[in-house]
Image (tube, rainbow, N blue to C red; front, top):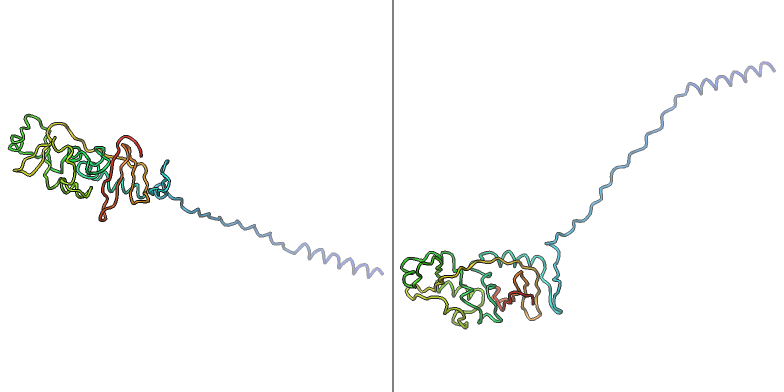
Length: 224
């Protein structure tokens, strides 16, 4: 019996020694989750989004921001003294009735280079404000932006200009004329093919003629 107890006691001690000698491995550190990148689709800039006028008539199509930008930067305001901006200088319900003296007032490039002989012939006196408006270039301007020759109009305002047949040119003498820029605010296309633009000085109407824009009417000072 004593021998059996001694054997059991030895076995228990041996088991304890084995347990004490066993090495334990540390628990693995938890993995850090990888960051997640959230990709948000790019939002359109104001110039890419469509701009709808505050008051667009029923049955019309508002111009997009791209169209408004084109009219403001590529059609108007390119050569304010001799180009589309000149057709905003007076009021007319049809192009035949526009004030030609106002439209042609600034003259083309180089119009200020008037010779002393020309000044004497038109009796310019002592004023420095004299502008030459060659008839050929006046015709080109009108045909380009109205589809009309000067002879197709009512000739409004031409009697206030002086003409020299020797130079085939009109002359504006006296009052200063300034080339004005404009800011396009809104616009729309109509069902009958017209394009109406509201700018900071009024409302102008255009149409397409042989692939170019020509003027139909201009109402300064208020919106359509």
